[in-house]
Length: 118
Image (cartoon, rainbow, N blue to C red; front, side, top):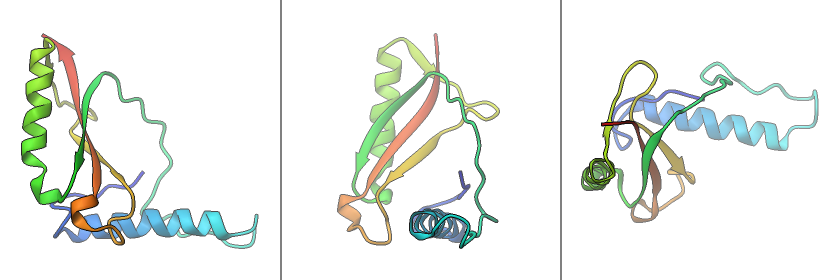
């Protein structure tokens, strides 16, 4: 897991997080056991239990995500739940594919909101 904050299109923290993840995964994939130790300074292995959440797949530019988030919130509400972001339970995104190599209109992002029953 790595943490990147801010606008994915402009945030240096996000860019650093992506570089760390892809660099780490490539090093692990390409190295022979014991030969190379990947730089793990920005990443950590963590057991993460998410709990109940609502999620939606957004396809397109990160700048165009807000209407997708509204659709997610409308769906959550229509199913008798509400979003509750407390502690570790926060909005988060899972980026599918490498944003450094994917055209922005083809970017895939899973958007997740933690929920509870009303």
